[in-house]
Image (cartoon, rainbow, N blue to C red; front, side):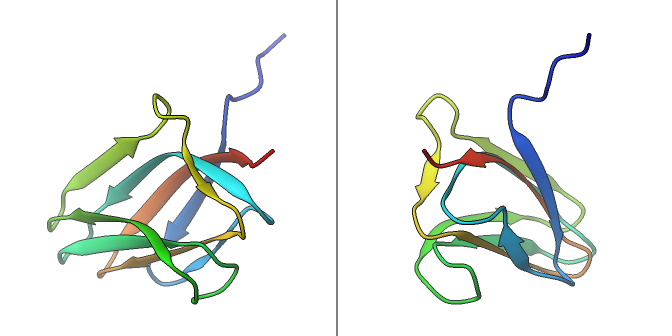
Length: 100
């Protein structure tokens, strides 16, 4: 019997910023794969491209950056999470769980 993953994973490319999950969530880890230009990803407390930016991560050209918040209990997004990566070819990988 295989174990279920600890967290859900959503991949958000720069070409299609999007809401992650549905409703309130907690981000446990984020990784940003930089593309052919310097890249960044903004995580906003909203279901659309509005709301407060609660976290930003940056990566250099063709670089990879990651941050884990598991030790701190994650970053809560009480409204929703909208992920907005920027930079040619950038991709954000977001591990999350529903906010209870």
